[in-house]
Image (cartoon, one colour):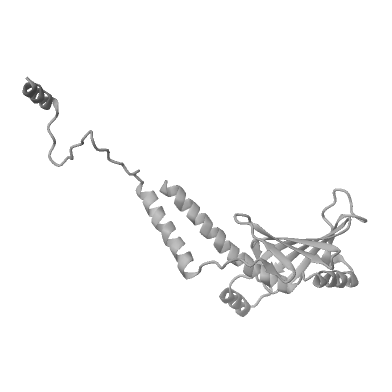
Length: 226
């Protein structure tokens, strides 16, 4: 009787199709998620770029300071902050953007100078907002930082005597009297806000952009893999 029941049960099981693996109730097979050909190609491109950056031109460990300034690393942010004290009575805070522009040859630039500029690469620009706080007074300076120069664009009184409520436009540096411009330059140079700082920031931002690109590529890779 038991054999008859066994034969009856086996007769109800469909025969295995040639070339198709049989499944057993005692084992489980993990099925890997299928990716589209586009996803696979995108992953190859991402991994190739990550490998190139990591192996051939890897970013350096960012410095934590420059002269009297401490540098605050802000992963994922499009700016960097520096802080310093001056003579124990002032606090200096600088917010610098990543590269936000490049110099273009002027209309009077010769063909030779244009070719030379192309060979050297773009002269990149980043913006600085400098705040100098002393007691209840805050002076602000909006500057342009080039690879070898720092130019003041606007001077602002953010708080204290002379501050206009709601007025953040300040005074155009180019419209100040020559003596006033020299006084502003000297004021900033004494606080180490000068061409050397601009050069340091360009190197720092160039390295930070590599780090941010590498971080972004790895984030996209992780997303596509899932």
